[in-house]
Image (cartoon, rainbow, N blue to C red; front, top):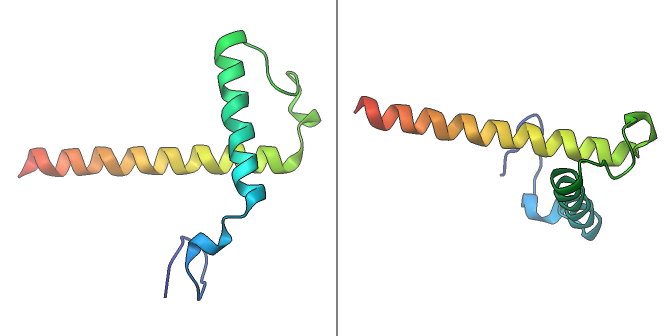
Length: 82
């Protein structure tokens, strides 16, 4: 049994990674790079013009980045305490 927060599945989570998932992540990475280098958003400044799947990917990736960073901070604090 595998666990992903807020879900219950009976198979390996890797099976949920589709070619479309990978493509969306690559698009978000390119968008982030373009924004950092030029200041321009991929679909312009109005989020209402962004595809909803793209927004979902952006928010999911950011949420996971924050969770990972928080876990790293907690592990570092735990090491310092010992």
